[in-house]
Image (cartoon, rainbow, N blue to C red; front, side):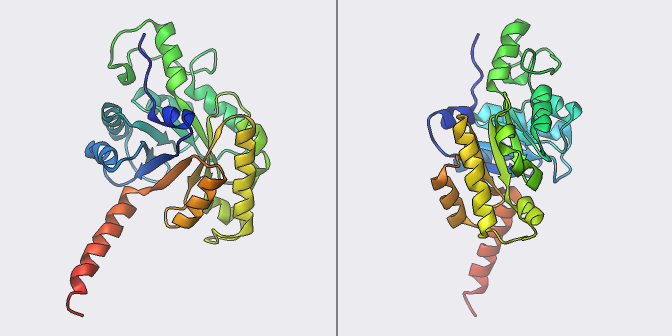
Length: 262
C-alpha cells in the first residue's frame, strides 16, 4: 500500500527547519494554496483561539493535503471528540495544548493513534488516502506512521516534566508556547529573559536525548530570537498567523501611500 506523505516528517528526518503558518482568520480553502505558494512546509489551524467549525477545518485540511503541505490542527482540549474528528477530517497531526505532565501526553497519543499505539476508533475511508478502500490493518498502520503528535510546553508544570513528556512513545515534538510560558513565569512579554532562554535550552536538550524535535512558538515578531533558538537546535518555527500577515502588509501599503506627501 502507498504511504501517506507528511512534509513535516520528511523535512525533520532530513535535518531541515520546518516553516509553519497559522490559520485563524481565513475560512476558505484558498488559504492552503496561499501557504503552499508562499513556501511553507505546513500550516496549522488554531481551534484553541478561534471559532472555526469542524467542517471548515476539514475542508482546509483536505485542500492542504492536495497542495502537498501537511495540515495540523491545534485542538482546544485533549479530548477524543476533538482529536479523532480533526484527524478523520484530514489533519496529519494534532497540536495538544495544556499539557502538564506525561499522563497528559499519553492521553493525546492514545486519542490520536490507532491500536496498538493508541485507542483511536477506526472510521473507514479517509481523505488522506483519497477515500480509497484499504484493508484496515494497512490503512491504520499507514495513518499511525504519518500522524504526528505535537505537545505544547507553555506551563511551568510542563517544563518541570519535559524529559518525561518528550519520552512518551508517540510524542514527536515539543512546541514551546513562549507567550503563555512568559505569563507563567510572571514576565509577560519579556521574551529575551534568561528564563525563556533556559526553557528552550532544557527542551532542546530533552528532545535531542531521545531523537525528537522542538518547535518555536509565539515569537513571530522576534526574528533574532527565532534564529537564536534554531541555531540552538529547534527545528520547527511557527512564523505567525494569517491575520498578522494581512495586517502587517496592509499597514505597510497604507503607510507607503500616506508618506508620499508628508
